[in-house]
Amino acid sequence: MKKIFSKLFFILILISLPVFAQDETEIFIIDGFVTPEKPHTFKLSFYTSFPVKTKIFIDEKYEFQISNEFLEDHKIEIDFSTYKFNKKNVPYKIISENESGEKFISEDFEAILPYDEFIFTKSGSNPVSTILLGLLLYALPSPNLAIIDKENYFSLTKEIPLITFYGSGYNYPSGNIGFEYTHIYKSNIRDLVRLGYKHFIPIKGIEYISPGISGFSNLKGFNGIGAEFSIGLFKVYDVFTVYTKYRYNLKPNNTSQYFHEISVGLYSHFFTIDL
Image (cartoon, rainbow, N blue to C red; front, side, top):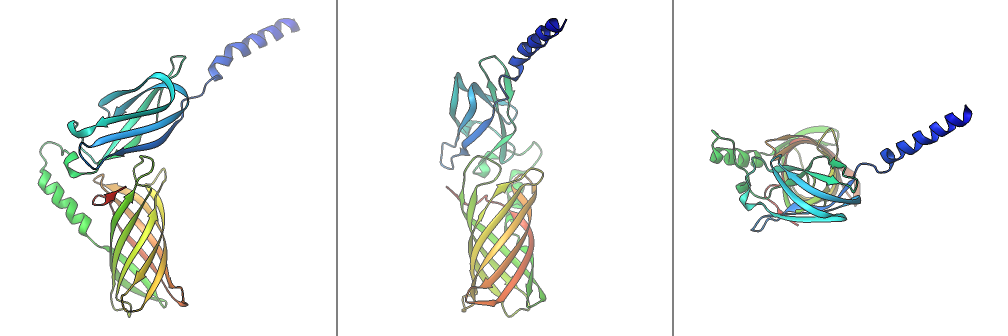
């Protein structure tokens, strides 16, 4: 009887082995971006955890074959000029098939479209008014609380991303260099200009977290550096992200002169130079 149970147990193990022989395909994006120059081309490259055939399903309506052979390295280039999308962040999935015929569908990735000409509004809406609304929102300054010498001052600040760096085809760039102007009301420190860099880390449940560093000056001898940390909370119109930010500023040669800033605003890298 023990021998029979041992044989049955061994057979069950053998039967179960194919189930656990190969896990679901893992996708590792190398590059995924749309070129700013014409023709606007979506360039995607990635590798997989084991050899598979792959397809891409874009915006829930366009499907393209990537690899007809079982490969680990995959790439494709698609001319987006003839396709219509109704938002700037276009979702796509990668469908893979292993040598056993099993198919896997990846999580959602996103390609960011570089220009307004890609955004085709829904029927009944006015594209001109949509663009004007977007420009108005882009131009709005952010309310800012400056804490200087334990006193609270209201201020307005406007940050303009200048150069954007792309890395792996997610919702946000890997980082950007930006210019910022701040006016602090009723303070001895009134007007500040700032140049800095911030890095974006996508986070599930929110949009991103972003550490950054910058240099500032009032162009009258008050110069210093600032370290900041911002959190992207949610999107507006698929182009803007509502964020909150904290920044600590000080003069390196006089650490007793420091101040804090807390702000809420809209972030967009719509009008930047993409690298």
